[in-house]
Length: 338
Image (cartoon, rainbow, N blue to C red; front, side, top):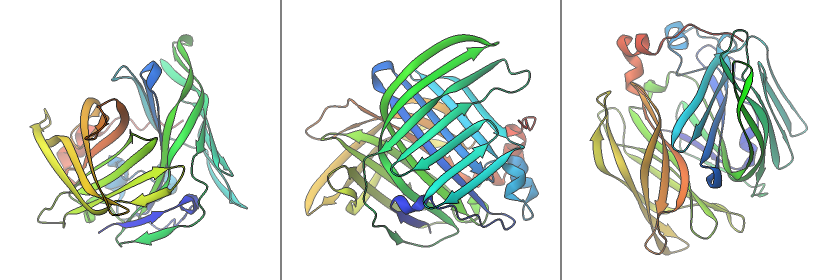
């Protein structure tokens, strides 16, 4: 149902470049002291783009490359950009990776990632600029794979220290600027077909928990089109990335959204680590992004011994809705190329 790769080798670009293929690099970071969060995605093919979907089966990833950047403060979205870009470059040599999508650049050297952010374009009313450094806690070189499917999730750096600076401008005047100091996450996804070819819906999330650990989970509810899938991992600097064995993920307190999607507001993860039982509770706090097929949430975690004070990012994705012509029309905006 899904191909999973664990380890830092997942950064290696696949660059399939066949019609209908895609690859994206995802980063998020949270500065809890300033109630500030950011998500950054570099796309080599945009499988959520209605234009890419309309171009299937002949969609060329090089025609749909770009980036998505959103910045959030106090549980609300300040600004967001999704741009197709004209000038794109992906270079990988001697374990050094550099990706440029328009004015956005990220480079990997050793165990750290540098992301230069510049969303400004002609006639833009507001923009985000800055630089963030993601330092991966894990130096473990070993990797492993499991499962199969058209879609591949590559869990690379689930626990990072993030530092840098960000500037938010309106009409070329600086509105807000911050020195960033927080925690972050990085993964990569790639595939060979429309997302709805294999999946109906999924829940994904990453959240800080007690003892300087991070939990990462993926859950596909059972449906007529897919079997249930529940996988979760714990990451820390001492043990690297470990799978939660006998994992059971339960969806609780479902609520009907304004877009008529029934989404759980609480997620429980049960399983074992090294033979010891583990029980985690994830609560959706704020809807940072919402639409006819997708929600992004700020979340908090709790355990039986720890109160709910650790934060993370989660998403709900309804892939089947992307088959709908109505939904595609609703999410179509002028294709801004920068």
